[in-house]
Length: 174
Image: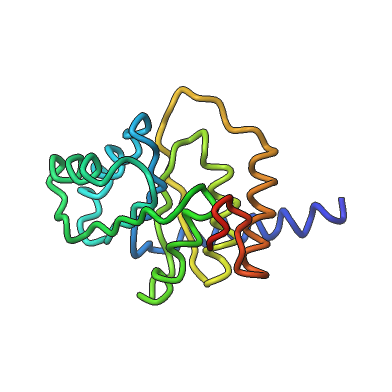
């Protein structure tokens, strides 16, 4: 119980603080073409937040993504598409320095609901290492949550990146 109390206090503090933070950008962890609903959801979300730039990490081929946002009437100049990532950890590590360099301190993080636990753990570590907070926005799906083991593994990889700059990704990059 002694260990759990500080963790609960920290979690509560983060939850309360997030209610007062106004995100300055949108970050979407794009899915494959079969998960195009992430991009569609984000395009609709972007229409409701017309002043926010949008970072898309990975996901559907650029032409599909651009079509989705164009169809929704989103200015293409708001889109920053990054296809360097090879997995969820590198979704964050390939973007975080650019976000920090632009002075962004808070983002909306959009991904599928089944993927949000893992994305949130990695985001807390990688974005948090640069002082960037996030508000999670889940895209509804019918899929069950990913196994906790994936979250633990990738949380460890995110810590490795913070400590060494190495993600443990198969390609050996950031």
